Length: 547
Ligand code: GLU
Image 1 (cartoon, rainbow, N blue to C red):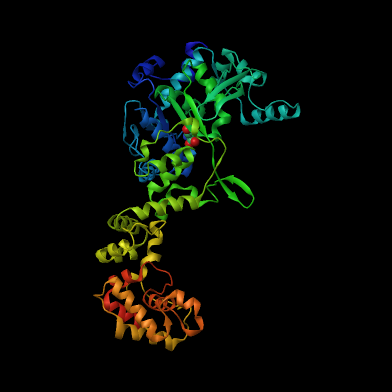
Image 2 (image 1 turned 30 degrees about the vertical axis):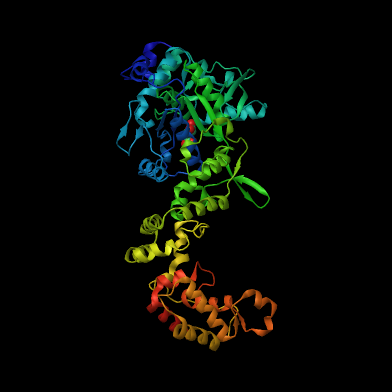
């Protein structure tokens, strides 16, 4: 197409493509270095699939001394959300993801390959579109919506493939005079690729995760530049990943169907095609059917859900690693105390059939992690969680630091650690009874022993004759047994089982009465430890509360 006409279509572009090729030179990295990116739209929403992608991307970049960068794909201006970029950065940071390059917030960015926000790269895309126009590999399309609809109907009627291609792509055949005339009339237009592809030919692509894939060549005259002057996702992806020297495009398999379009664009522009790695979706079992996790139906899809639940990031990362690579779990069993970053991740071990998301497994990983951290860490993390999500609990923890740490220490440094907590949001429900401020309105169920007089009798006998805060655990336990013998309960379970009729009940029933009176719970960690922490005054008060 002649230069003047191209100039009329895309005026005032200050540079040519050569300028950009030089401005963004090849990266100075090792030959196997992986350069990859996280490329979200700025909707502010981060989902588990994004974290999954990030955990693979970061690992692959790190383990090859490569680069992980952030690029914001905002060419669809309808999807903009206020502060979306900052929200994304903040959310992924909560999971430990930071970027070597990219936006830092809505205004600032770091790195030499920017701008990293697509709407700020309009001139760049237009420059490459201009070059395609000059080479007769693109053309302006003035077709109206109604005309497009007409074409579609015609294709349906004659049972042809739907789309703007070949002879159906009418604007392809406009003469330069016709184009000039349309421009004189100020007709709106878009710029399309003059596709050289042949739908009857096959292309082969080797996906790093899925292996060899075969597709028909793309022959649709794809839109490159929209009416608002911004590129389509396809065009921006290709230009950006070329100029930013992405070596690996790691993304969800919902993009597989666009792959022939992308490969074709890379080739038409004379760019090297990056390696693609398409991972499968995270699925959920619902009754007998398996479906993709959905934003609308499944709160657990949102990354923010895990933060709100107080599931430690480490647990989420560990879980994602187990689903990312099939050999991870074995590796982790052998290297439990090592940083999981030492695991050698590979694309070929990423599963290709959808992964079933298993919340229970994630909770178990979390329980394990929370059983291993120190009581101080448990305290600090719970405090941080409560600061954001539960002011009442936050105040109680803040005002009772020693007591809380002692509570978290119950059965923590023992050989067989208790796995009480699956997340920080359930801590309150498990330790509330340790704090008078939270022990309001208790309801009691004393289990086996139901007679009210007998309950009072056990509590009074215990506090008046057997309780001493200074007793060791052994003495405490012996005294409990003594009391049982005296009150007619078996202190020895074996003996009890052999001669049940001789006893009113057994030592477990009696300690349950004390446990429930103190905590209103029938199951708690070690009762002795709880009593030590509660102290005499509280114990007396709690017993008196049983009217
Ligand atoms: N902006 C695209 C998305 O949000 C990125 C896809 C890709 O990674 O190429 O899904």
